[in-house]
Length: 182
Image (tube, rainbow, N blue to C red; front, side):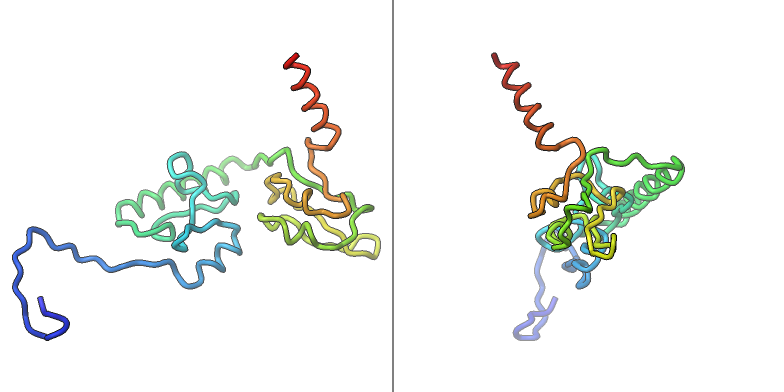
């Protein structure tokens, strides 16, 4: 070993030497995360849906993670994750169809003012602006929508709605819960 300050060789008796370089997320990782709707950790690496229950899945259906995109890993762990991600992707293709979330949002186009509040609020980028009757209105892609309801809360005109969670349905649920307490 060489002393970095003096340039002189040093001899030190040690039990073990670990040769490892530091690792950080790629510089364009934030762009990929935005493109595919994948969350990132504080240090910039991609986050899985759940560390134990879904270690190669993301919050975006059909997007899987493997290897060092999640953080530093050794080769056996990366290979195992790659095999798990490939198996998960193959199971989607083999099924031939995908079940969609039943509680998605939708937009009543007659009430939509085209303000784009819902579009910018959607964390899954499931809302796009389309032309309808010569005016720009929001359209929810139900395949991408996860039913979080953020767009419904952000919509100033009340055009964004949520399947299964209308005001009338929510009041009925609260009333039913209160009656059960009597």
